[in-house]
Image 1 (cartoon, one colour):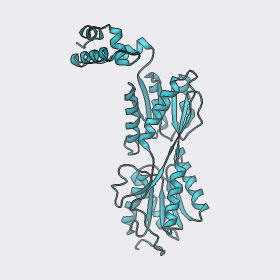
Image 2: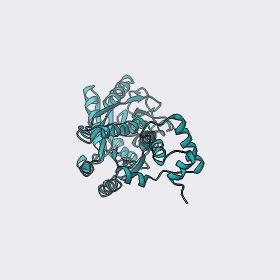
Image 3: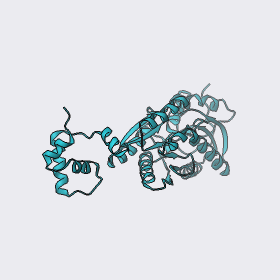
Image 4: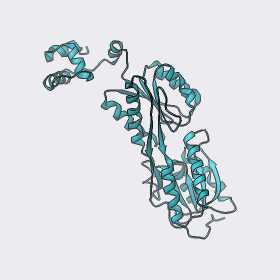
Length: 340
């Protein structure tokens, strides 16, 4: 039989309400009393009944986190940051993954409402913010990434990609590159579209000639599939900007298969700085996105917003920066082409 709170209280020599206050950190309890209660909890193997707490307080201990795809190495650090921040405050996390599917996304939001979550962090940019209106109608706070302006029950985290992009363009210009291709993320993804447009604008302003500009999904084979169009162009760019590290790793693999060397013949840059970026061959030059900090900031934004009487949201800005590794090198001047 599970140990009850009353039994813990009896062992610690306190009331059941005192045990509840110690475990939920809702009132000040003396250090000595708290230590005694926690010793009884540990000694008796007591676990909080979250359902009972929900009935008594009218609030759950759950926060939701919505990502695109659990297999995408972009997300583990986001999850870790959000989960650790939630756990530090005594909350649990319901992780949901949309798989870039609109029907599944709608089901995810319905599940979150049914689970009575307090707030939801939506860190996928492959949705429209109108899809989440049901959450705010249910009085559930939402935080987005690069999606909308803050408002009641809505906060937004702005990732300053411009900073990293500026550093990346300066870097390739310093290496003598004057022609580039762009393989961006999917057109249905708001962040991918923003990054593509920012790259095009910055490169053109600096006088860089743009060759094929493509949009693909966030998979290794997608990056590979975009390479033939680049190789078949009349002129070969000397540098390729990729909309994610996964795309970039796929591109480097396809270039190698075509007989081209990275960075000897073509330099390649990615975005995200996932854990595999430094392990790629060659190690990938990339724009680093502070993914764990995104997770931490997302929870903190929700927690702060929901503690306010008017539930007013806010905008948070996180910077990016370039990490230079070995996939970029000085331009040789001569145009390299694949062997026939």
